[in-house]
Length: 190
Ligand code: F6R
Ligand code: ZN
Image 1 (cartoon, rainbow, N blue to C red):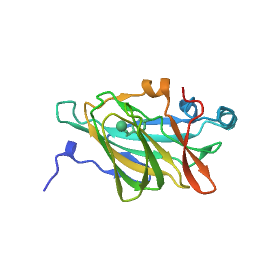
Image 2: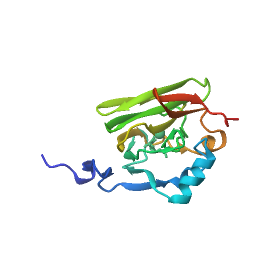
Image 3: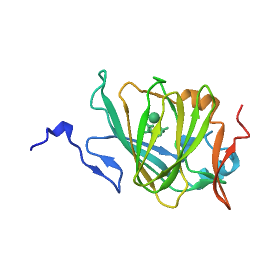
Image 4: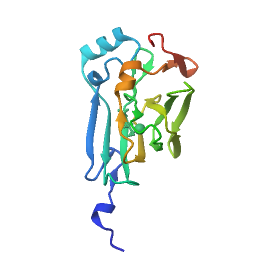
């Protein structure tokens, strides 16, 4: 059976790109304010401005019931003891959930419910799903030594609210310890 071209897309796992995808790249400088240790952030930035993560996504339609999806790749590394992370966001349509499909690498999804403050650190390992419920801020961290690759699928009307996170920040952070990754309260959280 011949696929309609706009309904079928190939993705390149190693490069984390989808055919016809829109590419967003986030470098270290784009993550100002996301890490607790500002001195380590400034020192790292003085040495260079590496790519921290990228997302290649498709938005096939914006009608009721449509879906958007993207493949992300988050590099391994740390600022001080804090693992490389995505900016993190709430969905503009707060009720919109999302499904992540973890493809390769080792990491975790930091989830904080906007109203109840409930927090969870959900493992992201290859061949696993993470369900992100609505009303929940979500941020991906790479706790491993290889790029973390995943696919996210979400309702077309989800939208991305970065401002609430930029203003309030996450209340927790994920740090490296001798016992492995640990969830700590962020000291600077207001
Ligand atoms: C989409 C979604 C992911 C993220 C990606 C990058 O709703 O959750 O595709 O967009 O992990 O993270 P942010 O968007 O927080 O920079
Ligand atoms: Zn999302």
